[in-house]
Image (tube, rainbow, N blue to C red; front, side, top):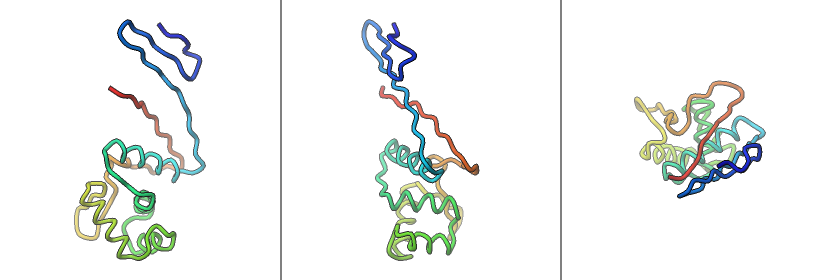
Length: 131
């Protein structure tokens, strides 16, 4: 039995259990914000602890690539204090499997954490539940 399907919250009742469905829509200001929220969800799902600086660094890497400008931007924007701390964070995230590499000096964000998104706008649609 469904109590209300027009409401953003409705409950499906069965003899042995009930299931609550909550419909919600979140709109953020920028593409970067949407990517940040997605990374937070994926990190939580996979049990990986990422700081805001780590997440911002991953988005920066995705947007401009692994090059000198990437390191300079991470320091200039205040994610880390020096190029060395950026390199340390990159090494840590690589060893955790968040970043991938094919050869020395080449890094990319693992698509399990952040899919290839080349458009100006992005929409993520989730179905989140417990077993």
